[in-house]
Length: 209
Picture (cartoon, rainbow, N blue to C red):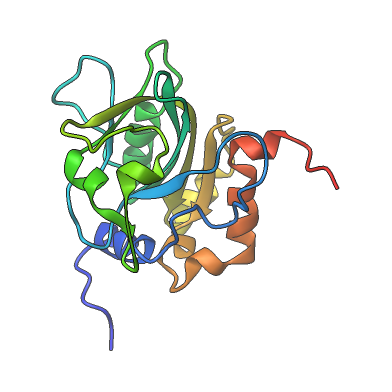
């Protein structure tokens, strides 16, 4: 029996909801802390983290998938993000690429209080705010952090993917066929894991024996 998903976006989010707290393929090795958490989508569909530009209260970027790696110190926190966007058309791809284009402004990640207070794992009562390692007390306001590093993976329909292979991606961009995102247990795909392993800060450092 086919699963009752009424849109491509709904199917992609349903698949990503089953992906782990750390982007698949990352082994937690390399420079810096390792405090990855899945921000979008979550299993309980609560208020999830989003991205925005400083001073903007209306225009928000809500990726289909969003993972955050919290780093820095309580006085100077930051976050690295790995985002996934499912694009149903070339125009949709162009729109989403523009949201993540290099800019002189710093992108901000906003973590709502409700998301921070809830546990990241169903079988672990530790709330997310403690898992960040950056908050000293239970939050009463959203936790807003500057984005230090950004990587984005775009899922494209087959005909659009063939067109995209003729373009030159920016260093923070990665492209995959939509089937890689909608596949059952897609996070266990070795080729996808290998790509994600390159799409992180650790990928810029030599792994010593």
